[in-house]
Length: 217
Image (cartoon, rainbow, N blue to C red; front, side, top):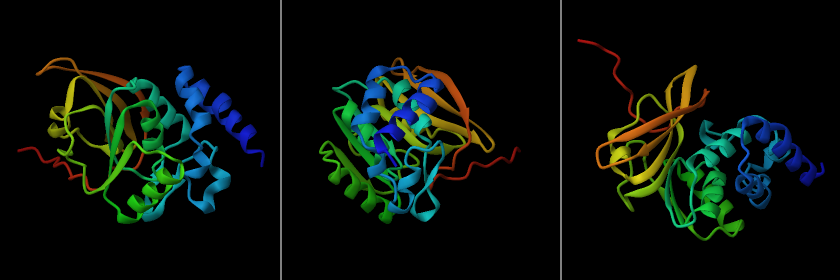
């Protein structure tokens, strides 16, 4: 397999047609080597438009979804990021290249170790992998400029709204299968938030998230 040709095809045939037109994001997909973050058994799938399985029943998002989220949050060089769900560490690596520092929280010890090893091998020094359940928020280091939640939630826990700075953005996948949408929630003041629904999707629920009661009294 010609890796660079496969990477080029991924960008031009999957990602750019999905309205990812920010040249900084497209360039970053060449710099951060996706094939170094997928499990060894899935190397051949690194650039395919599919979710790649990870240990513990988890999965990496499709390349176009990762790139689109990265574009939509408009991360700047001086900003700090909280990611919930480290997975393989790939999204954290992309975020780390664009921002000042990334704290990525992973509930699975196996995935935490995988993400740390991948980030270290890729030379990413400004990302910290924390072990824990961040599904209801993460106080340590808060407030953040950007929060990326790498798994679906039925509703966004209140804590996240408090843990993002005024002017900051949250990327959250909200809803229940099969209808979910990626939302960018911007904190416009101490008390006000602006939500933009970017695209619809269907991904795995965030591990550790509390079930939402659907009973009505």
